[in-house]
Amino acid sequence: MTTDEFVELCRCGETTKVQYKECFTTQTKIAQEMVAFANTHGGVILFGVQDKTGKMLGLTYQQLQDTGLELGNTANEQVKPAIYIETETVKVDDKRFLVCYVKEGKGKPYKTNDGAIWVKQGQDKRRVTDNAEILSLFQGIGAYKA
Image (cartoon, rainbow, N blue to C red; front, side, top):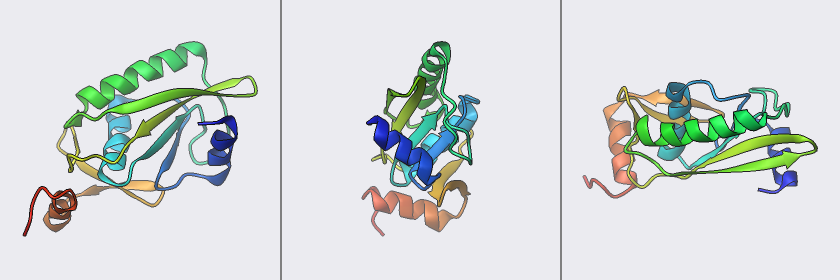
């Protein structure tokens, strides 16, 4: 992602495909975001960007390293089935940010460790509990035919 692309994502606000995180919070909360992206159309999580405002705060070197490690562990240990993510660092002026790419998954529905299924709904996510909607996630990937 170029610097200009990153700045534009920060200026345009959170969407179905873009989420801001000031810093890595917990594996449980980040896993919910990953699951929602994997179950919907994929997206990016921008770390070092103030949630809801898009203010570009940046991360320290140690925060970049810790966040990258935590993201990999979260994708492997907190998402079922595990997903593959990509990360990159973007520099804007003297600030550094971490971008986490989550692709739409082929093994839907994805769940968090507690069995919750999440999908994106606008700029937020919501938990899926309706059996018909869960079935449609399976049908969407051709895993089940009615």
